[in-house]
Amino acid sequence: MPAGQPPAFCVLVTEIRVTDGKAGAMRLTVTLTLRANRSEVWAAVSTVGAVNRELAPFVRMTDPTNGAPFDAEPWRVGAPVSWQLLFGVIPVDRHRIELVALPEGRGFRESSSSWWHRVWWHERTLLDDPGGCVVRDSVEIEHRLRVLDPIEGWAVRRMFRRRHRSLQRRFG
Image 1: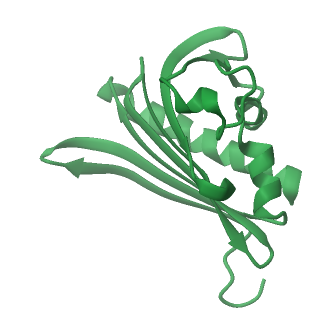
Image 2 (image 1 turned 135 degrees about the vertical axis):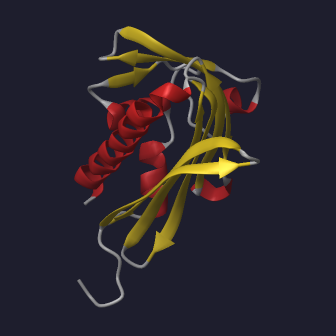
């Protein structure tokens, strides 16, 4: 690896922060450089089906938009509801999703609330890179059941590492 170049797979994690004197949210940032151009990566990551490929086999989300890309009309109106299914069949969470696609296939911003999370904020940005594309997932989560923070933190870190490994296998 040339001097000054980040590794192809890099996970940066900030655990718990304090905001306004009360326990704050878990924050996580995961960054990955892929050997594919941004538009190719966007086409491959911009639907619920694509998210499900990253999450498989442990979690599957239902698709309230019937396969619509994140920059299509069904995501721009209302707040679609998606169920998270453990092993694809056992309902474990229900998300009301507000999603905005960033211009020119540069990613998306999701703001959700669910049974488990008072706040689930996720931004995936796709950045041009001389060797392909950089994918950066930034997540901020405020859990409803604070006692489960350590377990939830472990699960979310694992999930995003797994999602990025899936992208790494697909695009190199």
